[in-house]
Image (cartoon, rainbow, N blue to C red):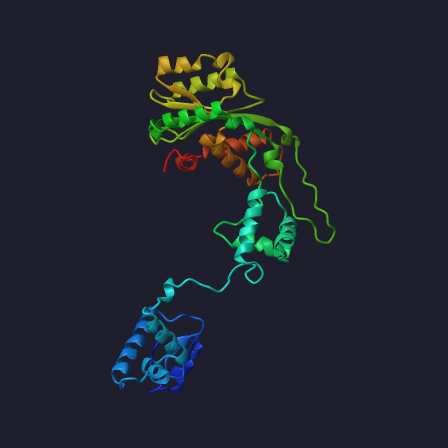
Length: 382
């Protein structure tokens, strides 16, 4: 490999020179080899400084080191030699690897100043639903900066660590942040930290409709502007309900479920819990966590908390109101929904309850790694 300071002028055969140029290097007037647009490493700066002091010792008092003499001795350009001398006179040498870039870079670098960028962030903080046209309007009106919508868009996407594109807002009900519910959340988290992660069991229900399979997209014909119809059978209107439990421990299964048509009720949910007690999916010492759905607390489910604790040693805990982010099984339902969207649909012959068969196939393929990933995103495991 060719270094930054290699003396080739003593030999200078045509094949070596051609090889140097072919690899993107150039030769300066002092015989040194360098690559255009690349800063010399700190070793080259130190070498040039060393040559400067050697030449300085050879001079008479009052004489100064010649730029040409230093450039020739260090095999660098006179511009680089001048830079090193300036750093020596300032009392320190600067490593290019630690030197901050002062030249403007990134989207809008030539039109948006740092103050303009701060103003854009201020506008975004005031209202995160502003359009690109709103940003350009306020920039022009308040700061006298005239830019296009595309410049503002590129700035939001590239100027900082995260892309500042538009995204659907999370809809949070107002009762999530009541004083009583905030206190319940703190109590739940304090209690959850005291439970071994392999004892957590989370439960929930998931409605599934045939549209999850048949809601496909097709590309428009660029010649006619139309897209062909997709012929389906009556299964697209069928709906089912899945009741599930998931857990983090590896000593038992990761996921247990039951699927049936129609909607769920407290009687079906109670039967599902009893089946999991009989199968061993739920065991003594488990920490069963459910949301506040009525089928978990009333009618046939009334008294389940005392029953599980008194007869099976299972502690039943209800989540704070409006807190699906604390329930890993919600993320598992999201995985199911995404996989259903990308599942191919066969058209050969009629198929009854097609979406139910597809959901069963995908849920049977859930692994411990799938469940562990959901627990990590909810913060229960590292």
